[in-house]
Length: 313
Image: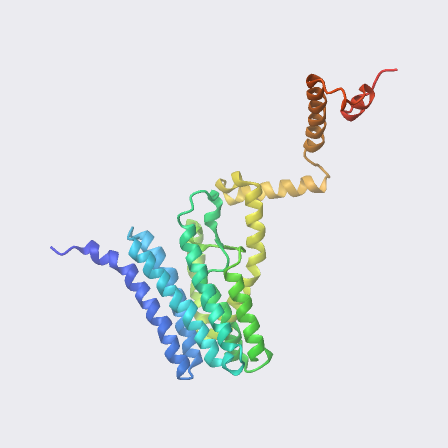
């Protein structure tokens, strides 16, 4: 009897290979002048990249070769392919166009290498699994292609000028290798009562993609950029309240509202620094007295003032 489990475990790697083929197809489309097809191929590669990891975890089919294959496919689909598409479309018109394409590709590879390294980091706080370090490579590839998306939707403009495209590409490349926290969708769980509304929303998004593909993609990328400040605030808040990560989101909101109310009322934590400083000074005086340091000894009156005591008249 054939082993059906082996075929199912092969499925995530097959999706990864399809994502790689989609990214490589973007190169052919761009060389043929079909930039809409190139953008669609990279978008399809991003969708397949989001599916293969989830499917591997769902089927318990994760493996070392799958992780390595995924990284290599991402380097091609979201590093090499977007850089060459941008070069053929716009960057070929300036002298620094090819260096900009090289910088973008190198940043994608560095970002993937850091991601693989962080997988073995067991000292990070538990809430760190909700975040990526820097912009992930699929989102970075689509963000770098945002000028092309706008060009395909509304035509030429300042956003399609080679200098503007080069500056935008460098900015996205630096954001990918930065330490900016961005939200990860891997830990998102949909409640049972929200399944039906979520399916309706997915159907609406599918209709929007089919009807207005480039406009929808541009709006999606702008919304992704808008979420970065919120992700940074959320990461900083959880780093200050790590115990709140294990409580439900509703209770987290209660904790945040309570903290804001305390700040409005002017409530502050105890003055630990002043108390600790006074205690340290008093301890220094006691140590000098015990050591018999008569030369550096401070008079009794000054010692009492330093530690906050007053002499009785």
